Image 1 (spheres, rainbow, N blue to C red):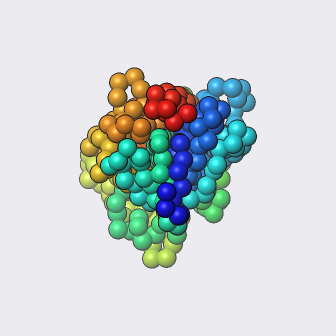
Image 2: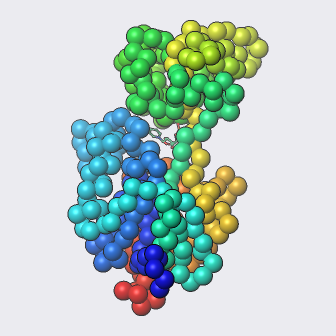
Length: 314
Ligand code: NDP
């Protein structure tokens, strides 16, 4: 093998519940996994507050704490965790090639993709211009800056409900802009939103423009039924409208649906490329929970182990 090329049995790409669970199982099966965390180590749970629905935590746990525990458990069994991105892959040959952002070339007998998904944006020019100047996709990260001030949250799912509830503890008024006349969020989250006095739900309402040059000074909203416009005097604008799978680097090789979710084979984590497995939100647009992601991470490691055993690598 040429100098500078590293040969590994199992390369895991991504560090959310799927990636770390795959790592725990792969490490315990002597696959000596190397895990590249990506640019957001810990994934989406790093920007969430209380996780109340992960079994085993009767009192709930903070997302970042949970991910630290996942990482420690993966490292305890010898996972080599690297805080870097995989920038490019080539799945043409029997040995799968990957390149890290700093140019490490890795040749892997098996690859587990667990790159997750990222927050979506509305696509307004003013949103882009004011990102990190009052526009955010993470209330837990940025809410503190707007304490005592009015804010808006866009979206109607569990994420939007969670963001609005978090902000309601810091801000006098939280405007929740919902484009339909109902929430998509789970019933329990809906109830919490409706029972929180300082969350004002604006039904059939869309953000048209975020006002301000260097800071958010308000948001122009429009009722998509009546056409009526209003200006909300908010200083913070939080976008919580769903996610996009982080699968762009695989698109030349791996079969995906039209949104970029990786397609897996039957009741397995196998992709169309032999020896490449997919787990977590990168391949799941239905359940998208930490516990289901962890479950598929476990499946991917077991699939990889069987594959490597059949191939005679382990
Ligand atoms: P969802 O896809 O569930 O919801 C997205 C919301 O944003 C919908 O209400 C959608 O409206 C709205 N939306 C989408 N695009 C736009 C747009 N351009 N303008 C305005 N509104 C828009 O995403 P979430 O991130 O909320 O949740 C994803 C998954 O994660 C879900 O399965 C959820 O249950 C889970 N989750 C669980 C949590 C928990 O249990 N603690 C916390 C957070 C998420 P419409 O309804 O009209 O399509």
